[in-house]
Amino acid sequence: PGSKLGVNTAPGLSRVGRMKDYKELLRQFEKPFQMLLHAMTTGVSGATSAFHVLHRIQSKEPLHWRTFTETLCQPELSLEGKEEKLCLKPLFYFLPVMVRRNLLSFLHLG
Figure 1 (spheres, helix red, strand yellow):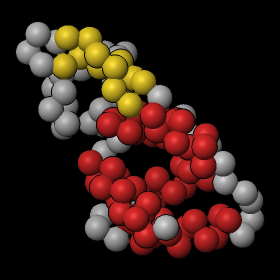
Figure 2 (cartoon, rainbow, N blue to C red; figure 1 turned 180 degrees about the horizontal axis):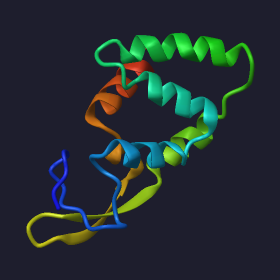
Figure 3 (tube, rainbow, N blue to C red; figure 1 turned 120 degrees about the horizontal axis):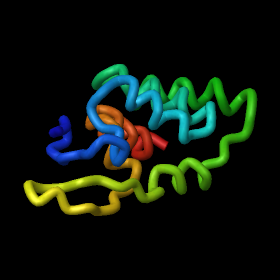
């Protein structure tokens, strides 16, 4: 089966394309970062929304950015190309495109 990211995937190898899969992907992050990433799904204003969420979260609890970064970079299995070659890609790659763009914009705001 294909995906929105142009990567061919096999069942159980990758979580791309469906909302339930995105929710499964979010569970790999600590709760505060789940909230940040969820704010980034709101479209073009997602980075700004996440920035406001960040300020609310930081007033209540410390954030562990190293863990967040490690989770984003953790390798995930995927099948790629017509030959469906098995490869490893960072979890960041499997986030929806809008979230990836907003995450990069969010980091630029900080």
